[in-house]
Image (cartoon, rainbow, N blue to C red; front, side, top):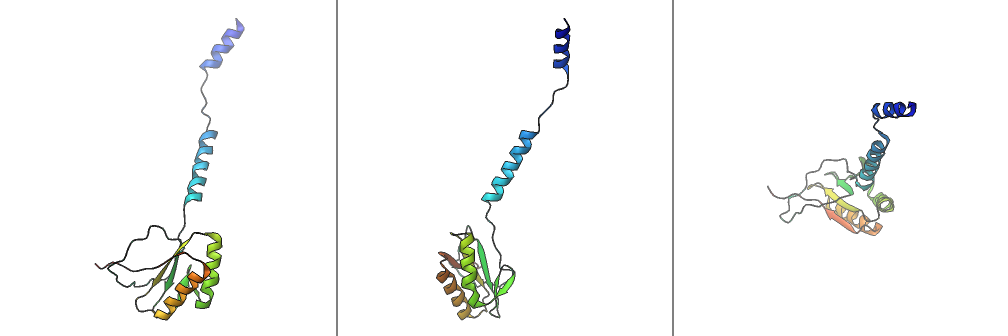
Length: 137
């Protein structure tokens, strides 16, 4: 008789919700989103892009190289010498092998600098290089 009372008292007690599986699931989702997110490395300079009627929107960009009107090359919020662009791109490709690069040059920038940066990117092995432009308004 005593065991029946103990069993009823145990069943009528409060129910506990185990939060451990919920917390585990939240951490798994957080890790999944962090791993699958691709981060864009910005150039760190505002440029006035030239207008092009054939300009297209690029879906995914991993690195933006900025060239201002004075011909200075900006990568990741720092000024980089044109001769060092190839080394920076090789290091970038070591991190993201299929990475894409967009060169955002000011419309008043020196064409020779833009061509040198484009050439350095291709010599480093970047397969997807494009030059930024804006559509006419």
